[in-house]
Amino acid sequence: MTTLYRPVLIETTEQAEQLPLSTRAIRPDGQAAARLDGVSEGGQWTSKLRLYAHDEVIGWTALVPVEAEEERTRPVPLYATTAHVSPTSIAETPARRLVTPWEDA
Image (spheres, rainbow, N blue to C red):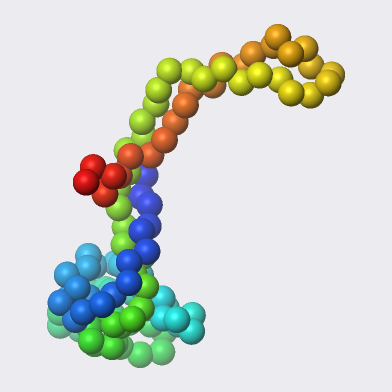
């Protein structure tokens, strides 16, 4: 499994409360915080400078972790395009992409 991070704008206090623990968020000016358990009750947001309540992170962009599975398909032919390589030489490379739950919708 591979973890990808999807940027999501935090628009409500309820949304901030429901984001998974260990989610990182970035304020428009670049200040960052993380939602960590054990820092305070309710898993509030913390940075090196201070704690933030859920309503204080409204307008921030959360980087929500999403598990992705690698999907492989049959090999795709790659044709040589340089002058010093024969145009008939082909390298077989398997096509690969990461599939995430939000693509299912």
